[in-house]
Image (cartoon, rainbow, N blue to C red):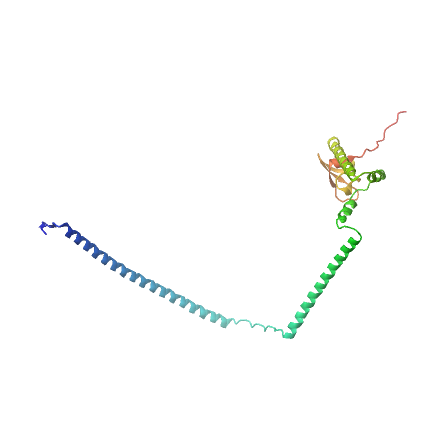
Length: 248
């Protein structure tokens, strides 16, 4: 190896020297880091010890204060719990069982009564759904003598199909007349009207107009506390006789 000035001619030796210097620096740096970690761990342990000591001191102070309060304000003596003996427990159980048996007997009696009613209906040939038909028939308005006569003459002589067809035609006819009344008549407050549609319990009754709108009205009916709400097509005006003079 030849030395030229302050430099080495062989580059490989220079590289070896640099690598050795870097390795020494890494080792020195690692030792410093290890020392710093030891210092940090030691510091952490000392902080934990201080926190534990402070917590123990607070707990001890709290214990002293609680003891002082207990000495000043003693707690009230609790009453002795009443313990039931075996005989009392047995008696209470018997009372509960007796009440349960009575309820069961009552339910059984109610079920038997319902079954007896159903059995009687079956014997009389009265189907359960006939109750709805009877209820609907009771809500129908009363027909006049003439209407009842026509009804009694027509229905026995027509088949079921013809009765259905007649009922539909009558329903359509009634709808046409109701529409004509709604378009042609004008209701004013105080006018007397007869109810021809709406709820069946009001059909055929007469009353006076309480309020009237374009398609709805309220009718005062004697015997009812509030005005009845109807459509104007459900009422018709009652023609009243007016006194007129006679020609001499």
